[in-house]
Image (tube, rainbow, N blue to C red; front, side):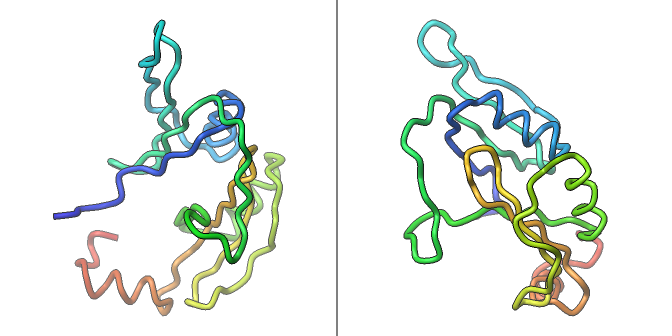
Length: 146
């Protein structure tokens, strides 16, 4: 039985730059590194998001992937935040590029967007009590969980 989303894996052009973005600009701690490639070379860096949830970053990406509204496959990464307006200002003050300002999405969540050094789109979303995600959370899990 599936219990949660474990990790998102991305390949980076420069693994240290991309890990630094998630670690330093977004404020998520580095959990561990795996030196599992031939010769003990760095194979991945894991960034801690929440209990049992990670971003796994692989090195040596060479072919850019261009996401678009009609692209098949992975589209974007979304982080849930408790205060979207404060998060937006914190990231702006850290020099993170802001792609869209704070707005209410179709589901009723408050959201804004940025991207990582490799161009991967990142959404930040606050879930107000009346948004569709909160209503679904309340149907599937006890309120103490959130």
